[in-house]
Length: 240
Image (cartoon, rainbow, N blue to C red; front, side, top):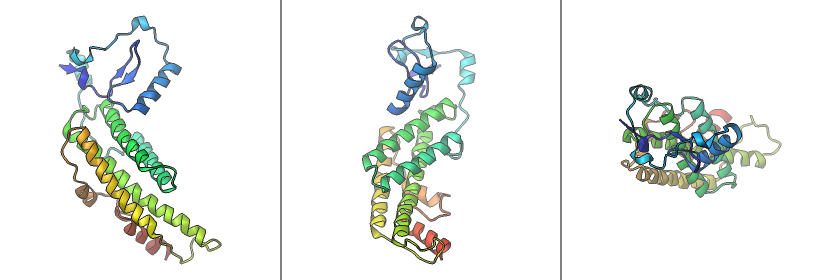
């Protein structure tokens, strides 16, 4: 039997409003806009799912369709994940440019976790309620945010260095280090650890071991998760 209250990712169409179960506010707003533009619903044919918590589906065919395939090794391994990764990088770049604050980062971090869980539920990689799967989602979202934090802190440092060294060839043997970016990167790194635990609490799963995530991460070809390792990679291996 399938309880609709557990069906994260379910599309709900009703006279009182359309929404995706478990989706973020932005995702639902986009979904509702698409409905207005593309779906001409006859409300007489709609079913109000106000009693969703008590509805149970027992169709054998439906159960076959809803079988869970299992989580991928990386949640960023397909087009949806790749687009999210690019957007995370964009948010972190805006943050180091002074165009976004910590509240924006936290809100988007939560949205990434929520949207990824909905997507993986809709593609039947998870039920959306499995503790282990949810822990993987939060962990890998943290890993990507933490990596882009290091990358964009170094990007901001490098761009500032270009301005200081105006007229000097980008391939010349110069280097630039602004400790402000080091401290901001370290502070933000800890901030990301904190909001990761808040997200884990929100989903009622155990504490996420962020140190272990970084230790086992494969995203280390351009340095680790700290500012200095990224700086060393760029200036020592590429510039000199």
